Length: 173
Image (cartoon, rainbow, N blue to C red; front, side, top):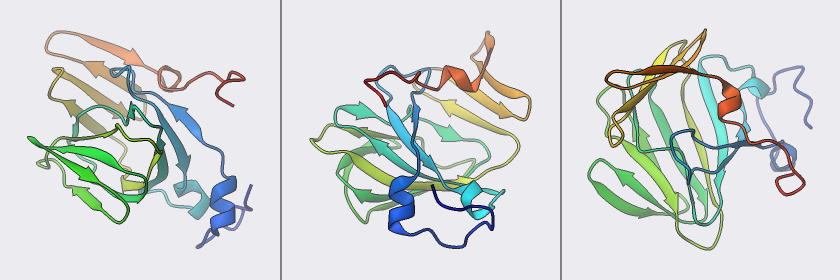
């Protein structure tokens, strides 16, 4: 694990490879399976969320969505995938860049129907409050300092971060 006490301005490739991955699954998408390396705290960043994300073959990122407040971007590092952006789908690969302004950017989502991991650098704003819209499900999520809330036209329920994490098993470690 790299020394982060001085909030570095640079991570080496070796440091990055040694970072632990958090295993995440979107609670509204059973096909979601993402491994994240959280970078922002290593640099002392508080207003940006930066991650290296990995989606295994046959899996999806999160869920077709758009943000109300937080803009985001993606840079494909390795592998191939399909990006749903608005009403279209395009194949993506190393060097491709996508950016989604808020609140009027198109909904988007990544899938990996190919043989190798899809790896990308993901970043964006990290505001105290954001609402994410999932237009295909009629659901929404509010990310607030007091927690995560999932709601639809007539329902709401409180979620915790443990709803997103995958318990460690010999198979996943």
